Image (tube, rainbow, N blue to C red):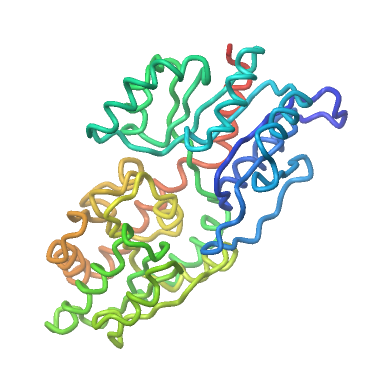
Length: 368
């Protein structure tokens, strides 16, 4: 059990970019299960995702926007943390802190979700990484297998790479799922739900084009499409010819605590991203017992989608292929969709913040 004496607790420094509720759930789980205090440096809150966040009392939060590199160094020197997590390589100040602390014997962990795709730029990054990575990071914690391959290309030994860095805040979705599944057995909601920021890479325009065409062809049955999120493409998509279709609803931003209720009233989750290294929303929706329709660009499919068992996959950006997947869902019986949703729930609930905290605690006791 965690100690009540702060002098006996290890210090963990987390250098993060944009914080989301699921990350906080994992950090909260770590302090609840281990003798650690967490010091979290984060980038300013994204205006497109203004989440309300509740921090554990043993998590101290710092705003990266008000800290220059010297202030970061001073914080790191004062804390002398045993373990450091840092988001990839985008923040050069974070890299400097990790090099400084690694030289002093701290365990430094690079966390990232960038998938290996084998382009020229990534090959160059991999070649250069072998010069700076060993002095900066001792371990890598990636989201999935394609990210794990990137870590190996950067020079990390296989026993220094973990997967599963992203874990959804599963508890509220699992709690809501039982009632949602029971209600679906009585009356299955014929509603597609897409939750994503409205930016070009998320594919909302292609999804609206596909669904509106399906409706206009008389092949959508009584189904409707709801989209949740905001972003710089919100007005463009909402006001496009397909986005204005009467059976398409643009709901705007929804706070995390309200999302289970939105999902309970939905029947199938769709994520049509053109580029999506992972996608934690996939696990959240799986936990809610929703069948999944994902593009082949969605990294989280490797863990949470079994094609033919709990959902379907389409070619990213291909409107006709999206239509085919949606039409296959519409043609499925409610009983078939229920069975798919139950399979989703089993897959989604198999990786939790508690599991995440167990891996983090193992890293705490790893050699640097």
